[in-house]
Image 1 (cartoon, rainbow, N blue to C red):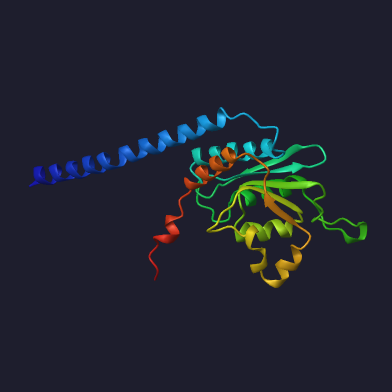
Image 2 (image 1 turned 90 degrees about the vertical axis):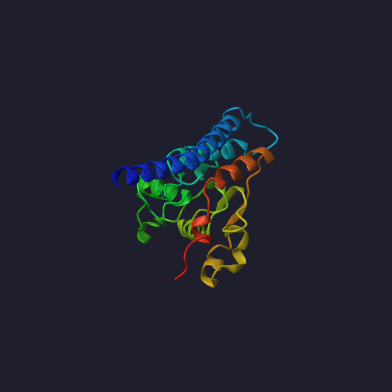
Length: 218
């Protein structure tokens, strides 16, 4: 009887390994191919946002390698062109944090570093983000969009639209308060090549939303 149970367990383990190993190998190959496309990419001077689009897809790749979703973001000082902060999706590593989208991680790091204080008497407004531009590899979701609006950042560029979950292209659907709050903001596609857009989308596709589509609804 024990031998029979042991034999059945071994069959089960081998079956799982047989099914899972090719899938893991295929995923690794796909990711390696994406990395090759990124590292070999040459910036095209015809597109003014190329350097920032490439920067956020590089950090999106890092996010995938760390076990989270394939989205990266950065803050740019538009007066100097310098990237002043980076952020990436950290939802699943080192542990699950439902709020750690790339834009949230970016703003957390920036706001914790600069430690802005609210002081009306001295005209200090913590929402003063003069000259800062937020660049993200994928159109912000509703959660991130309202956080960006609340942060005071006026300009947001995204490398690729998120037709199923993005909010920047649906500003008219915001609640009245947030819609009015966002009236002086600019949300638009980054000016970059079609190849960088495709890379950003391919990285995002590693972040499957099957958890939402396949969840058991109680």
